[in-house]
Length: 347
DNA sequence: TATGCGTGGGG
DNA sequence: TCCCCAAGCAT
Image 1 (cartoon, rainbow, N blue to C red):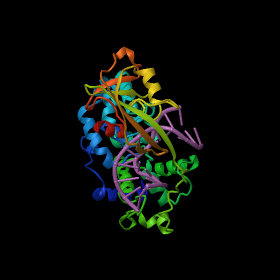
Image 2: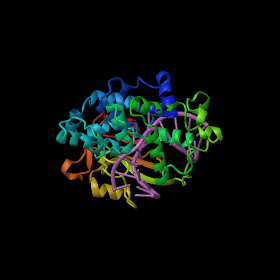
Image 3: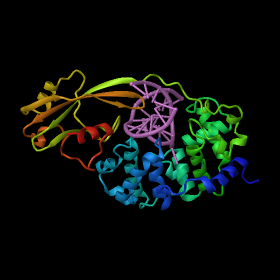
Image 4: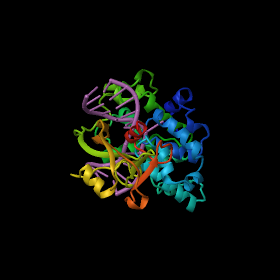
């Protein structure tokens, strides 16, 4: 038998139940697989679809990214989150343009070196775009394997990871690897879901150990999370009489890296001291706005905005280089974090 | 190797 | 309202 039961049952199931008409499956190329795989990291299909369509309209190929400004690329990523992915796409496009004549490389060793591409994404590109026998191990696959083989222990532990990679390799076939790869992701996304899995329609249920022991809800084992901390930050929404707003470009590392936000008050800094240090313009009106709650994976953020109206904005050389004036409304020019985008639209 | 990095939706 | 987390990677 060239491939096992698990693999054949999944391939059979895929014929009638797999997803074959997602936007990135229609005109499949290494480029479309690359972009979609990056967008899909830690992000659900439903969320990605509109971003993918808009992105591909503006950036149909590697060259179009290599020629654009990072700010514009990040504007197409605004709201999608994990912005390092967008910055890494930009870096990778530059590398591909320079070293590979804008042709996506075909070997694992070359692909794995590209920024933002790890083992699983490299495997997905090789399997889906080139039909080469490489495995993936994303959240869906981990869940399916952990249940089928009843793997206990936290997924993030290295010995569990190794075990799962070995099982992934074991089941990945050399023929129809593209269909198999899509099939196991589809099964995880639509049948072997985190809560209330649909075991009654699952093609693998017969030999699934989690089902046998009724442990679907316990597997994969979740790590207890520590309570989220709350951070608080004061921001200033400074607008002049011609509807320009002052924005701060955030450094590339850290939260919202490379995006634009409102100027923040430092620790212990007051609005007046900030204005003295940075603006030195007469202020027309100061209004305290309602605080905004924003929740991240690791902490909750409380944004305390203050709106400051001024008559005329100072000349560019008089403000620090990280500050920029932007005409309102802002439409697809720069990257904005989700809550900042909401606040700007309300101005 | 443990943690930082977003956001929106489900329960 | 709150907690969980969804097609991971980089450091």
